[in-house]
Image (tube, rainbow, N blue to C red; front, side, top):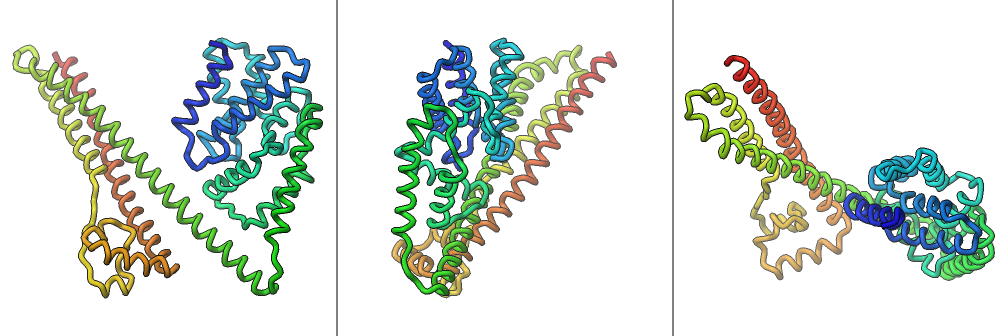
Length: 390
């Protein structure tokens, strides 16, 4: 298998396993498209095979840094991941440094030097000339909302894109200038038509107030979406850590019961009784607290129709509505949907109580790790003392 095929498989698996679902644009689809467009440029350029390989390797890895960090500094992290990958295949330091330089050339404000960096830049922004540019732009817009809380109205977004495409971006290679620049300008014209179509004559005051309300609504929606997503990810992380401790200590207990305990009845092994006891007790306690940290804690309450009218019930939480008749729940939800403040109050309650659950879960998980760490240390010291005292 060639190094490019290995890189493709590695990056695909890395994105699949570690990339957050909020990255609607910077993902394997964008990476694959950039590699394909770079190869398209290279086919019309007299470029040695070794340089082609460097460029394509750099493009496979240029966005993998998003798996470990946010947009700022992801190029440096991508370079580190690439170096670890190529070092395993015994590539020279000079070769790896060259690929690293190409990755870093994709930084936003970097001016390309030489043909290879020009190809990198053009391939990275090749979607500007794509017939599916609008889909790519919307994916980036959604990603920015979820990762940075940056919200734009339709007019703001379209005007910002037109300004960037017309005044701030340019292609560098001869092939891209000749073949992609005209397609990019077509996309610009489509955006300009969209802006003209969406503009309607309104009174200045009412228009300004509406824009502010829309921006406010989008900002609040994004706030809840991002915060709930973060809470959910934190809960998943805690459960994952607890499951690891459960698995490790279950193995320890199994080994102790099958190997150590049957030998303790022999007189020559009596010195192992106390260390084994410490090890088993610490493992059992660790398992108990790990189970407590992952144990569902659902509060089930009863309420009256008046409680619903007074907004004392969170209809978004199943522990509150599971005892309601469907028609009753349906009518209550209709009342909720009609009242924006009621919706936000319910979501705030959801956030608050989810945060309380996370607080309990992480406190128990912290205790679990302390028990496990102390138990392992005490057990090892006990075994060491038992053997030394023979």
